[in-house]
Image (cartoon, rainbow, N blue to C red):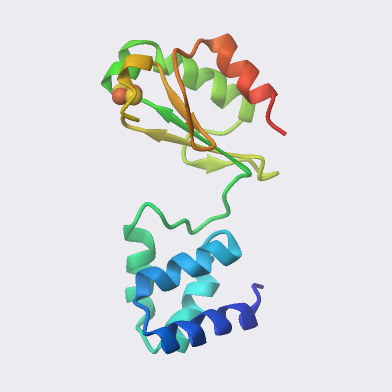
Amino acid sequence: GHDFAVIEAIAAKAKEENLGLIPILQRTQETIGYLPKEALRTLAELLHVPYSKVFGVATFYAQFHLTPRGRHIIQQCDGTACHVKGGPRIRRVIEEALGIPPGETTSDLKATYEIVYCLGSCGLAPAAMVDGKVVGRLTQDKMKRILASME
Ligand code: FES
C-alpha cells in the first residue's frame, strides 16, 4: 500500500496550518502523484472528516485523479471546431497507437489519454494539448510523430 507516514505528515502539517480539504488533497496528489482511495481513507481518519466528504471533494474537481496518471498527458480536443476539422481522425490515431480509449492510462503508465472540449485554440483546429503544450493543425501523420517521439 501507500506510505502511511507520508500521508500522516501531510495531515499533521495541514492541521498546523489550518488547511482546508482542497489544499490538503492537492498536497497529497503532488506527493503521491494521484489520490488512491486508501490515501483518502487515511486522510479522512486523520482529519476526522467523513470519508464520503473526502471522496466527494476528490471526485468533484477535475484537478484530482483517483487513478495513476501517465508520464505523458494527451488531451485531445473534440470541441466543435476541432471535431469539424477532423478531430475524430486524430482520435483514431491516438487510440490505435496507445491501445486505449479516452479516459484511460496505458498499463505501462506511459500516457494518459483524455478528451477535452475546447482548448481556446480553435484557430489551430484540430488541436490537442500534449504535456501542457498546445499542438495544432494536427494531421494523422503529425499526431503519429508526436506519439512516436514520446519516451
Ligand atoms: Fe478545439 Fe476550440 S474546439 S480548441
